Image 1 (cartoon, rainbow, N blue to C red):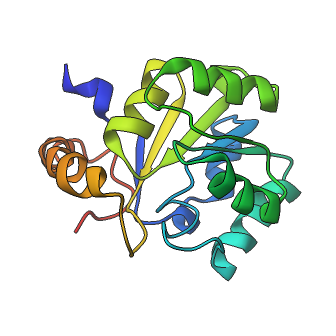
Image 2: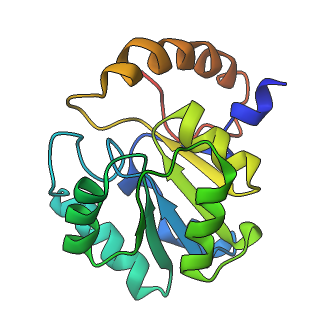
Length: 174
């Protein structure tokens, strides 16, 4: 039952995910969560490393997009800066925003990966939609109060069980 909350892959950071692996797995599209995945929640700028990683994915022909529960203004500021299409106020883990995001990219579930930092929004929603889900350790910084007080505490249960599946672990959860 808990497997619906398990990612297919775990990485210690976004930039640790090798573009070659994404190519080998046959993906055409990559959907990315915004806060604490691409950028810190209290910033509108991604790091140089993340920018370079996104640039390499683009150069390899991947279609990229952002899917976030945050506001149009917040998502638009970062998506505009990065030149990426986006779905804001997604209400993840609902399936319809993921479908809307795939339509935006022109990809199907089996050729789309979802990368995010939260089990109960990103991974659960992506799994419900049939995407290849990748969990990353959240970036340092401020978190939404609901995430900090509720989601992260519940995630500890899932992450403790996830350690029983070494084939998923690509990094090390602290």
